[in-house]
Length: 336
Image (cartoon, rainbow, N blue to C red; front, side, top):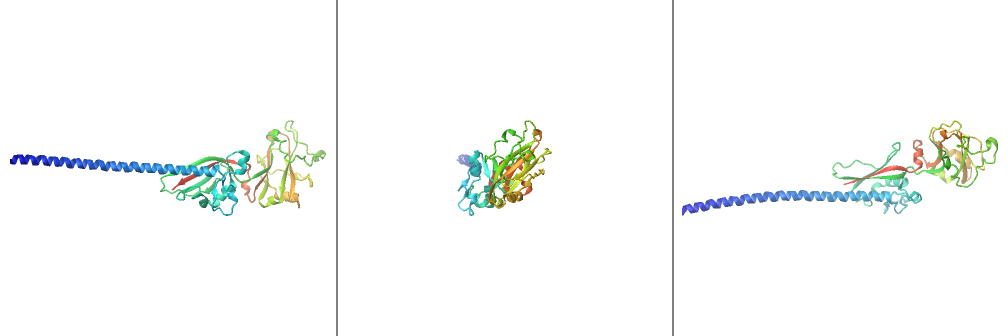
């Protein structure tokens, strides 16, 4: 009987040990499974969070690039409370159907970036930067908002769009495209003849003839108001800046105040404010004429621009590139 009890105890101990080992193994398996589930859950949460942040960055870039904002002329408001910003240049885009962003709106956004972006374009808990890089590397980037990224942030989403930017908000008042002579006769917007047309000899502005290499003039009108001088600097620019035509010269006058006094180009932009004000006299509005003389040699042809730049534009920024919207990289970064 005692032997049977001993055998029973032996088997009972083995059974207990087996059960204990099984429980330990099950516990370990459950622990590993729980850790695995936590890791999977964390990864899914990170993916969902990242995917959401990516959508925020995409939607924010779309809003800024593709819409003019609400209201459309928000950049003119002294108070930006209640404004939803957008940078699309509505006036230019209606004419050209191009994706052009407005420099005036960019400057207004730069002045009120956090107030306009946070809570309107991206959620308030997010951070962002916006830098516009011209494709032409001779032009300076526009740092609308550029701060150091948060090193502790594991996710930074970048939206890089190619846009056109009306870089300095310039206006081209006269463009004489002598490099494409077929366009020389298509720009007389007022339908008038050069006021020197009735002259004779050296006083008559006979048209240049590049086909037959005959020297002559190209003359175009422009309308100027005295109110422009408060916000505008007028410049005469050539393309290329350094011209090879040895006889090239120019005149600005008006029919009521003609002159034969010619001036040479300076191989750099020429500020015209003083000259134009003098020609206008006491008139609040006047039609002036730009006359450009050249040799008629197509190998030495150059384009001439009379352009309005924003008042106080640094001379180093008076460039032909700024006369048309420039291709730029619109780089919008978002993180938390």
